[in-house]
Image (cartoon, rainbow, N blue to C red; front, side, top):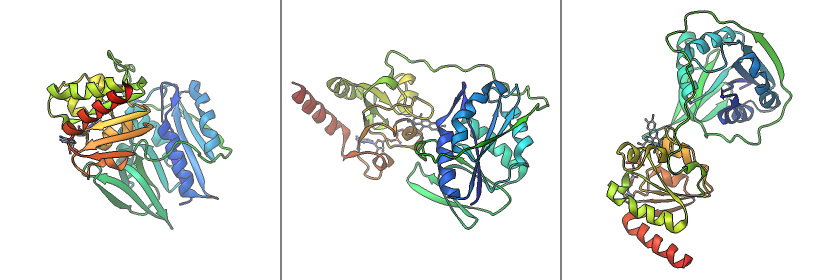
Length: 325
Ligand SMILES: Cc1cc2nc3c(=O)[nH]c(=O)nc-3n(C[C@H](O)[C@H](O)[C@H](O)COP(=O)(O)OP(=O)(O)OC[C@H]3O[C@@H](n4cnc5c(N)ncnc54)[C@H](O)[C@@H]3O)c2cc1C
């Protein structure tokens, strides 16, 4: 694969990590002599964001329009259409994020190009392109072959590729002053709302004891709380636990909850669906307790205990209390 374009994702005047993750993978796929092209849609006042991009792309195409400061699906679709035909590449990468999930299908449908979503890996050789995506909550990886064509489009799952150690090249910026026209009033940006922090800010915790559906009942949460207290940590949860209101929503970890990066993350009765993993996989040490040895959480855990949490957790708590005196 010789030329790959990456759509830069930014929010609240910050380039999001997914952009660097895609740039890194694009460099790996094109190899020496290939070209990585960054596509930027934004307001002229956001040109400063390009400083973070240009060192990692051979070419940056920046479509600047005063109405593109914040992501609006219909306006962004129209803006993307303005540059689509002029971008000479075999593959376009977008993030599997609220931004990319909205934009990519519309682009693929409009230009009738092969498209695969939520990709966790990409293999390319001699023009053949294989996208790897997960099925059955991460228990199975499927290989999807994309029909060769002028361009192909993938959305890439956040965290699938490292955002660090991206090759440095000197990118040349090609600015296009745009003014997309049309009626975009059906869906417009209103404001960003910060999620409530709640009584405990799990994003700041060094130690998190997190409970999943395996905890079975709200009455059993104190078992986890006791372990968290013994360790000096806090209790968090997977989505079903928050949905059942066993713990407040602010304690939920994952794509529709919080992203955490504690030193230690103890997952109790959590299967490890990718939506959960996305919020905690960068924890320093992950310890999982689960009855099912095939639970996907064991795929990212540094230590795993295959057993009943109702047996393991009280024993662990006693041990910790004993050590701490
Ligand atoms: C758009 C979208 C967004 C989502 N966002 C999130 C999100 O932000 N965060 C999130 O967590 N999920 C999210 N989900 C849901 C996600 O797909 C999973 O359904 C969810 O993470 C599963 O939660 P769980 O692991 O607690 O439950 P389950 O998948 O039911 O797993 C329970 C686990 O407990 C184990 N277990 C049962 N009893 C015991 C026992 N006694 N001892 C030990 N182990 C036991 C089982 O083996 C099982 O692995 C989202 C889904 C969608 C579609």
